[in-house]
Image (cartoon, rainbow, N blue to C red):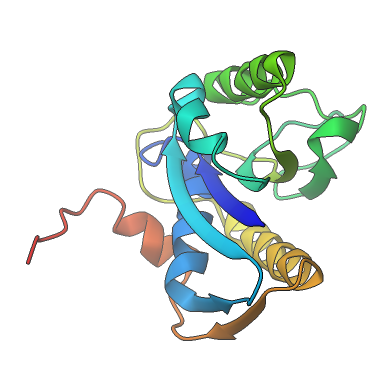
Length: 181
C-alpha cells in the first residue's frame, strides 16, 4: 500500500503551520521500513486542490492539519477518519481548512480520494506572521506525533528514531533556503 503523510498549513502564520512542521519533523526524526508498504511525506502547504494530482497516487493518506472543534480547547488533538468526521469538528479555523475540506469532497465526487485519516489540533495563533508556535500547540504536537507513530505501526510499518529535532526548531527553519549541492 502506498501511504501519504500530508502536512497542511501556512508555515509563516504561527500555529497555522503545525501540520507542515509536524510532517517535516517526523520525516527528519524517523526512518520507516516495511516490506509491503511505502510511506511518503509531502509538505502540502495551502495548495488544497492543486494537491489532487499528488493525492490520487496513494492508497491511504494521513493528513496533519489544524481543526476547529465546538467542544475543544487550544492544543486538543483529534484523530478521525474523513468518512466519519466527529460532529464537533467545524473546519472553520482558517481559510485553507475549508479549501482542503472542499478538495477532499471534490475527490469523493469522482471517487479518487484515498482512505483518509486526519490528525488535527486546535490552534491558538493563526493570523500573526511569525514562525513562533504557541506553547499549547507545541505540547499538543507531541500527542499528534505519538498518534501518527501508533497508527503507522498498526498499518504494519516499523520505525526507528534517527534524530531529535523539535517542532519549534523545524518551524524556525521553515523559510531557510536549502543549498543545492
